[in-house]
Length: 110
Image (cartoon, rainbow, N blue to C red; front, side):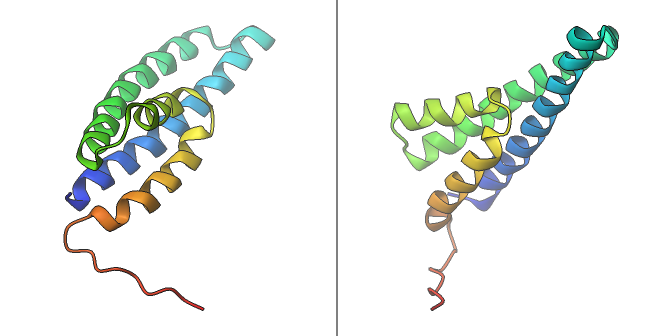
């Protein structure tokens, strides 16, 4: 697997997670304080498009890493749970790192 596959996934995981947090803040403002209805609409549409791109890159990574359906589903759904993508991304990258072409195993520090 090429490093670019992992890099694309990582970038979209972070972007999607940040946009989801922004969307949550907009929803609180909209329904809690009756402010920012137009902003919420724009942010939700941007997050939706970015989430679709995240799904494509995560599916590409999962198919190249030969994940089982349950693991792939969890990674795909993590983009809909606030802050979950941050934690899932770290775990996924640690697991996929040995599969990257041209990466030598890192020595364990004691």
